[in-house]
Image (cartoon, rainbow, N blue to C red; front, side):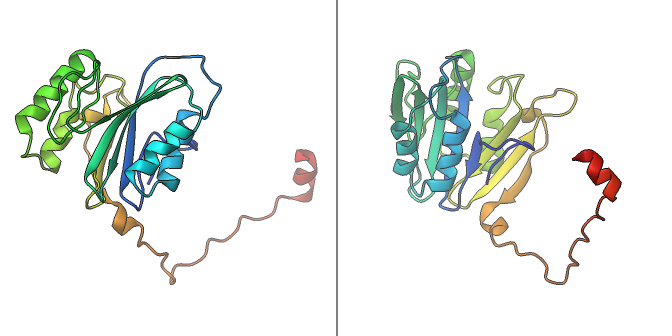
Amino acid sequence: MNVTFAGFVGSVTGMNAERVSIGEMGGRGMGHWDGVPMAFLVRMVLEEADALDRGIAIFHDNPRTCEYYFVIADGETGKAVGMEACWNVFNVIGMGESHPRLPSALKDAVVLSAGDRYKELVRRVEKGLGTFDADSARHLMDRPVAMKSNLHSVLFETTTTRFWVANASRDGKPASEQPYQAFQLRELLKHQADPSSRELTPPPALPARAAQRSG
């Protein structure tokens, strides 16, 4: 499952049938293009990773480009990691661990953000730790944790494959302020075409004269 936009062949957010989910947060490093684009590495995780370690290895074993940060989670084990992966750096931080950029170690959690947004996210997680359900977890992404440029927000419940998606509005309101739509990947993967549905009628052939002109 790829949370994406029409015409975009890569991925920045998604979850696969093995219940491995991934999301990203951009950084700097413009101009470092000699590697596999981030969006293709994320798609490789969705296509190939059957466990958390395999998802990490895809980023570790391939040449990378600009500065990006990721959270990869595994619904089978309940484990997740934060990951820094750019052209010259690769770091992994586990649940309950701290890092110079992420000084607040949170039990059973890995939290990525930056500056005051990180502090607010930590505060929200600490306040609700051990009590979160889907509704309260979605509010972790409310402004100001979400930026004004927030195009989409997604909450994954990897143990059940349920997920919720919100997209920014046409008038510029961030995704975190829009209604969430609920889905379940496990059910979507069971979907079969209705055999009683009529096949689409192919469009009529172009007139010979028009076809010659277009050639």
